Picture (cartoon, rainbow, N blue to C red):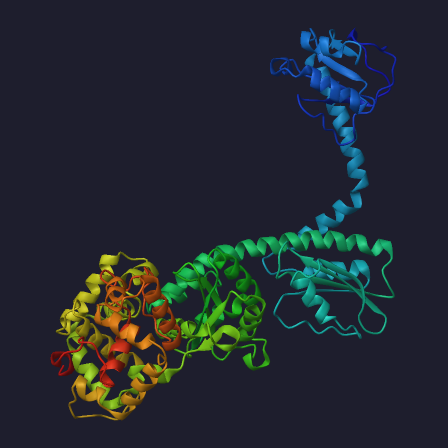
Length: 614
């Protein structure tokens, strides 16, 4: 636009209508931001601006920005005229319509957009092509091929904790530099020699580690024109990586639901739910799995879940645990990537532990999918010992389980006898009620209700029903111990020779292997007053306040001793509520200590002759 069009009348300020102007652009009350600046531009203001006030500020900013003047519909607002007097020309559009003014603005916008579009035409075309090549959550092959052709070289995407792809043609990828970019040591690395005359550039994708790393290689260096298609590809792949992470976050909730199905023994239901989603197919199809549980700082759990999902991909099912500081990892056995080489799930988790001193890890033994609850319980027990273990990780040791120490064939016959009335129930009811009861004994009814997503009373009612069917009283601590051991023995499902004899619970506890087990378990608590405090706590009905009063200790001191005993014995003694008494029955770790104390002649009066002759 060369000159202000006709139909305008100068009504305020100094100036003349023959001045050259760059265009017309709308402005609102406030900072007059315009992409191309305001030099020689007429600012178009609406009448509605008058109601808002602030004319003096607006005119002052336009003057400082170099605007040519102000255009407004007639009549011009009094506030605008006063503010512009002697500072900025004001033109009234008396003989033109609002549509005409709108056309002026439209022309100006079109000219501005054309300039920007011409400047970025090459970039826009590249982005259009690249976006068309990204067609799925894992489909980056098209983008990488396009980029390799555009730079006349090679393009590789490296995912953290996966094997770095082998590239032919003498190109050697700098794995140490790639790992540094993936872990956030640097956002990008340029011009790295990579074998023969190859030179690579590395780009981290995403705002936080662990990042995918784009590796782009050329022979003989990087001319300026070769960098432009790389920038376009980085933009597209960064967006793709963000979408993938968002999808992984959504899948975390699904993974938690599938994990709880497996914990509840609903293996087929878990497979049906996970199948259409493509959720950890290797895990759900495995004949044996291993459960690992990590503890982390409060508030860090969701970030750790997201990181492990990204690092492990479909090799493991990663889900938040029911407690706020737990992360559960479930993966096939054997680890398909080869754990002995440090590239499997265990190797990845150990590297995460090395990096973060706030983490601890417990691992259970390999179990079939229908025994995930047992594997999870073992992992939780091992986690208690991991605090003081080298590297802050520990694996569950089976010899510390009373069910494994009992003589196999007699113990299985005894357990079948105790649980025989349950065989009269329909199979589905028998399996679900027995599993709920086993979990309630291991963790307490309140924690199981949270894990299974059912009402607390439902858990309690099922446990009462199982105990009553077996002729036991759920409210009696000794009866709960008998029921717990019977369910644990049955859960082992060991192949044993037929046994026709008849032994009582007391007879089973008097065998040599059980004595060794008891001495070994209590030996973990030897030294100082730790064992005395634990036994006193059991004698007080696992009430920390009563125990503190009996021993003349502070309540916090008693709880600290109990937490230490949990770590050393690899047993859960205190329920998540922190009380371990009354409403939430003591977990199975307390049962083991009672049994070990009885066998060694130090038991509080929990087991009576009635329990021992069962």
